[in-house]
Image 1: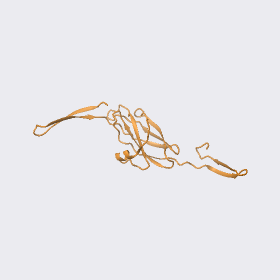
Image 2 (image 1 turned 180 degrees about the horizontal axis):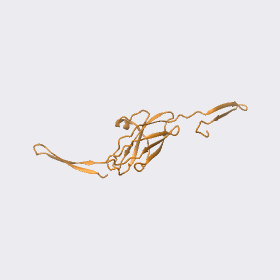
Image 3 (image 1 turned 90 degrees about the vertical axis):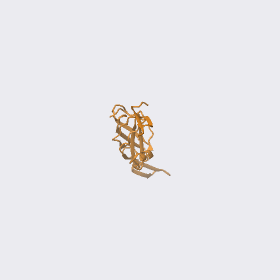
Image 4 (image 1 turned 135 degrees about the vertical axis):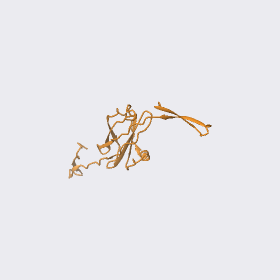
Length: 171
């Protein structure tokens, strides 16, 4: 990766006998996602939205390279250590241009469970942003069927009938 800026550093002891030099490299920091929002879609699926960040916050001229989405059933996102301990959601999303509305579907959650989410953006230099706001969502509990009936049918048979819950057309 290219270095955005390089500075020379020298130091000498008071007596003037010792001398040290080196360089300091600067890599741009990506913008933090400020507006992560979840929306429940089903018992195991959520829709996440946010504004795509810049990959270089100092110049606002590049897009992020990738995202790291983390989740947990307890809120671990009070510091960087908590973000590291949370589970990473596997994905290979390609970020949109900065300022565009990202909409991503995430799946595989347990019905009736509350989840906490946070996201980091990563730029072309593999520098990670601060983690985003904490977003909270609960995977929906499945609704029971409505109007369930069991009626004696022919010999050794029972006829069952019900109406599907709202939002379902069949079982």
